[in-house]
Length: 131
Image (cartoon, rainbow, N blue to C red; front, top):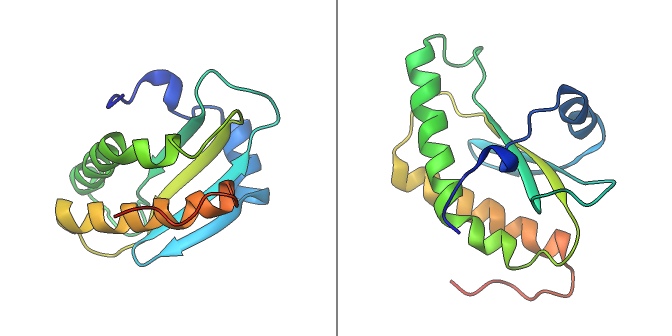
């Protein structure tokens, strides 16, 4: 389950624009998660795109470092999200809004907090997650 395959990545520009325009937003310091329920059942329950704006990090090395760290945290902790999804599919955009490079441990804490706030919105019958 701890994989991050091509099928789990959101690649369609049309869908990304739709998520950005009509999606629901959850904000945690340094991160913004925009999500939208898919119209049809997709191969994967969640398709996600991870972005780090060039406006905040001019050097590609810094953007890539952050994206690698974020992808790794998502890969290891997506079980929290997948366990609450029943039969629907979702599109998500995870945007790093911080202005400095933060450590892996801090990224992990913030993304877990994001996922814990997302689960009740996706599945209102689900109680708060166990920590």
